[in-house]
Length: 50
Image (cartoon, rainbow, N blue to C red; front, side):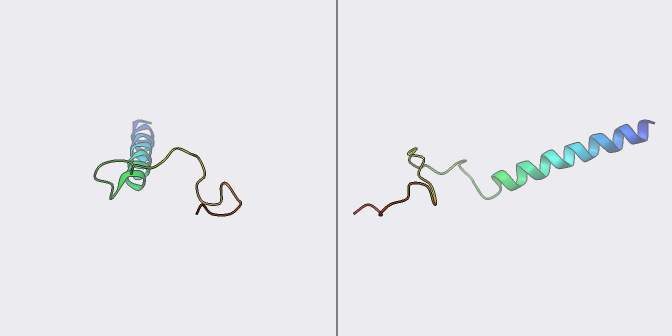
């Protein structure tokens, strides 16, 4: 019984670690700065700004 609980906890910890690793690997200072206009790739449509 305890072996199943231990295995489930280990699997959950590994899942959290992998999610954290893929979100933040390679970013030394966190999220890159950017504007908050909300028109990311494929967002606004229309012509590009001049």
